[in-house]
Length: 79
Image (tube, rainbow, N blue to C red; front, side, top):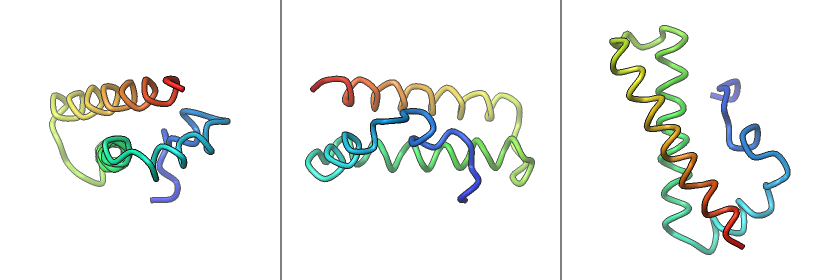
């Protein structure tokens, strides 16, 4: 979804080159990006009521997104 909020470009402005560098050189980072995009889409679909999920499940998805984003950020800042 192109209009999904919380894309990594929004979350880490100015880090596009670093993200691309890590994505192509670090398989762990590339997998984290995939995981983030997947869970971010799931959060968006739950928030917009495209998918009917419980409040607990939606909260769990948000926590997962936050955990993955923290891991991505840690790898971006480790230069």
